[in-house]
Amino acid sequence: MGMGSQVSGMDVNILIQRLRRLAMLDTSVFEEVRADAGATIPALVVAVAATLLSGVGGWLWWVFHDIGGIGDVPGSGKILLQSLILGSILSVLLWGVWVALVYVLLTQVFRARADVNELVRVMGFAAAPLALGVLIFIPGLDYGLGLAALALFFGTTVLAVQTATDAPAGRVLVANAAGFAVWAIVLALLVSDTHAYAPGFFVFHLPVKGFENAF
Image (cartoon, rainbow, N blue to C red; front, top):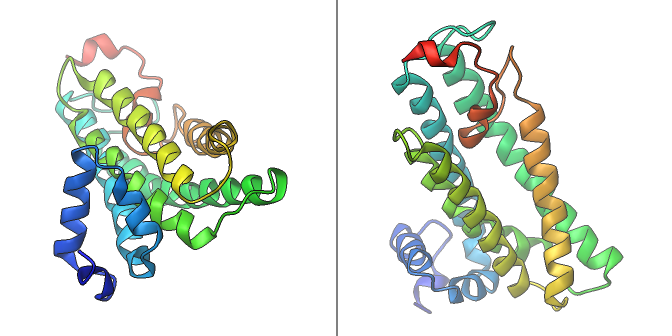
């Protein structure tokens, strides 16, 4: 593993191995990537890929339920563009705001040690649970899977941030919750009866009138 961490950023084998370990709840991965400067690009890849997979899940949910045109939302094509593509881009940008807010709160408010590059690396890998959102199209499990993905996402980011700072657990929780709140609230506000500029779980917030007639 030590040799692999010396190889330039995108060593796919190392990336897959780390993700597999995270899936097995091996949180030592966060300590590892925190100290590995070469893990910055893979961390960003994980954050982007997990967000896109979540967006795919939201789009598939719309398609598989055959909702069609609802109000000013004319169907799966618009959901593909707005939610999956543009929504995913906005989600990743807001994730960056989340990281920045955590850094500012930890260093400027709580006067703790934190390095923004380390935070990017650990929080990038901590975004992996969002990928579970690709499964939200499954009937009967959709909302539960979406909530589980968000809960795991928040939980792993708390653990990740803790490895990248000397701040007490309570302050880590406050800083991370503030960042998560900004991310989630802004994305929720980007969904209305005329547009859905948010991916995955947030598609559920579309005000679907006459939803029962879509089945």
